[in-house]
Amino acid sequence: MPRPLWSGAVSFGLVTVPIKLEAATEKHDVSLRQVHLEDDGRVRYRKTCEIDGQVLAEDEIGKGYEVHKDAVIPITDADLANMPLPTAKAIEIVAFIDRAAVDPVQYGAGSYYLTADGPVAAKPYVLLRQALERNEKVAVAKFALRGRERLGLLRPLGDALLLSGLHWADEIRSPAELAPPDTELTDEEIEGALTLMNTMATGRLDDLGDELTDHYTEALHEVIAAKAEHRAPQPVAESHEPVGKVVDLMAALEKSVAEARERRGETDSGGEATVHEMPKPKKAAAKKTAPKKTSTPRRRKTA
Image: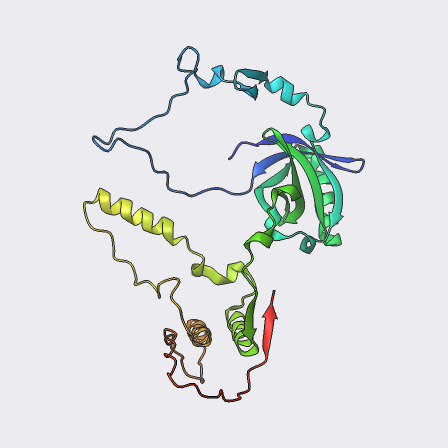
């Protein structure tokens, strides 16, 4: 069983819930070591003191803040433990909001399970969980972990409480500088995209089943097994059209809808469209002619 990352209490008004914090996720990454290409020897890193060159053990290494190049202020664990910070030993609930009010871009600073620390903590723990379930709200909380104060959302997950770390507002970049230039789309193109979205819609992530498979890790395991058995890896399926190829947008949407319906076992009476390259513009004729009046499709401008 994993060791708790932190122990303290959840502060809910005047109600205190002694808890322990545990990681909610685990990694299944394949660890690759650095080796010397000549003889496959392991490459190891050693921590040395730049003053005397001594190789240091972990218990000989502390923390410090660099004021400038030649001056470092040592910061001990006792200094950090005694900081004048209300959240140093408590997860402080500051408000309750609708979960939909939090933009998903703020998530990503870790997820942690809260476990009741002892029999006495069971009743207030369950009280907080059931109150959140009935209120259909999430709790905005502040807590200190790994040397900094953090922001998080506390919510029920099954019979437990989950604390999802959030980025502070000033840590999120503005998307304005990354937005593409103004682009005109026809109503037909927008409706085609909406049809594709509806065809690919699902209720929950769990409904996707095998489609949410980590193929990279599977392929890496196959490469490692093949190398160990002195054989070639199993061939992979042919890739799709090259990324970045210029296509007829409507034809691509129609084909995508047909393929999505086929994967779901649905029949498409409208036939299957083909993706093809956009035709090259014709050279202008030498003789100028008056342009014919043609009706243009109504266009919708996107920001």
